Image 1 (tube, helix red, strand yellow):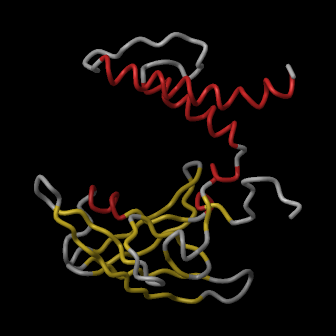
Image 2: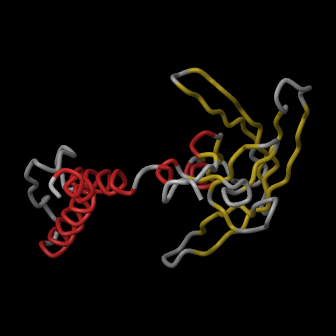
Length: 191
C-alpha cells in the first residue's frame, strides 16, 4: 500500500563488494594451496581487499570488518566449494553460501559476512527501475549486440557469420522491447 508497482526498498547488490568464483577460476586462483589477496577498486583507488586461501573443497576468507564506527574485528570464514563436471570436459566451481548452503557463483560482502544475494536480501539495480526503462535498456543492448550504436533509431545490419534466422530473432526481440519502452509514453501523450 502506498508503493509504486515494482518498487522495492531492498539494498542493491551493486553497492557491495563481490567475490565471483568464475573470476577466481579464470585467473587460476582455485588451485589447492594457493593464497592470494583479492582487492576491489573504484576510480583506480583501492577500496577494500581480502586474503583468500584456496583448498580442494573450500576457500578461507580472511578480512577485517566493522559495523558503523565500531571496533575493527578480524574474520576468518570458511566457504565450501562444489565442483561440477562440464558437458565437454573440465569442471565448474561454485561457492556454497555459508548462510544457507545454496550454490552461488557470487558472494557479496555485507553485514559483516560474505553470503549469497538471497541471504542478504539484495536486489539488482535494474529491479528498482521502471519497467519501460528496463525495456529501453534491453532494446539498446540488443542493438549494440548487432553492431549498432545503441540508438534504436539507427539501422542495424546482420553481422558477418550470423545466421539470418538468429538475426531476425534478435531484431524481433529488439522491436518488442522498444515497443514496451515507448508504450507508456504514447499512452500519456497521445491518448
